[in-house]
Length: 322
Image (tube, rainbow, N blue to C red; front, side, top):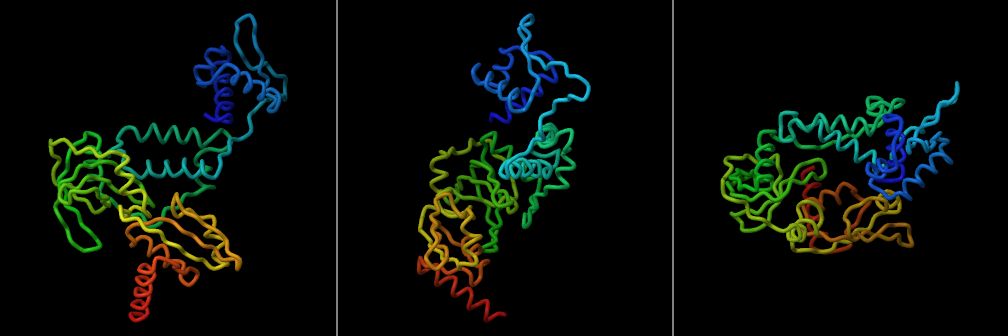
């Protein structure tokens, strides 16, 4: 809990209970006595909070104020990252039917988020009008299958599924051991052990049709192995054959790309001519190619050569079919 959160918590506790002991503050805030004392002093000195200690009762309280002397904390503002995280969470929860996997937990969570985001002066409805999280390109998923997947995942049971692979336009029946659900770039994916392939696979949830939940216990794969296979390369379609790509962006595009996150291990630098060079690991390249091509002539693939040749071939075919 940050200093800001503790201050708002103390303010709420004093307003709700009127009087509160040091022991209660320590327990509720989960910090040490010196930290609580520093927070109280900060509120007095910097926020003009009328907090006093009543020696007779051994409690802290707000001192009564005269007419026109109303103390209030300033409106609660979040950082850009906090606003995005809270509103994205709210969007995700609201987007899942209340009768689905999360069931009765949805309404209390949404209520709690509304309480965190809003205040008397800035209701959550007003915040939603002023700050929007637009999600474009999400694929629809069948709630029934999402619920079955989630249930099997938590109960550690195997599933028999029909999986439609868009890349090959084929549907295969597979037995899988679900490992974890991942929300990535606006879509849900299921990381699982595929007993047909004898390896870890990532399945797009919108392409899964659940046929049967088996009583057979799911194969357990360690987080380390899942991360080594699926998280080290570029994007959700990564694998174990890791390569490094180097891209060079024009000076005009560099001003945007230099602040973008393509991969946790990326390396970037501005060159003398103002262009920006970006390098990061990847494995399979379908998603990478799409991300590169959206920059058009503002990006050049420096290496590896096979990736450069593949994009060149795609562009030639595109021109030919235009």
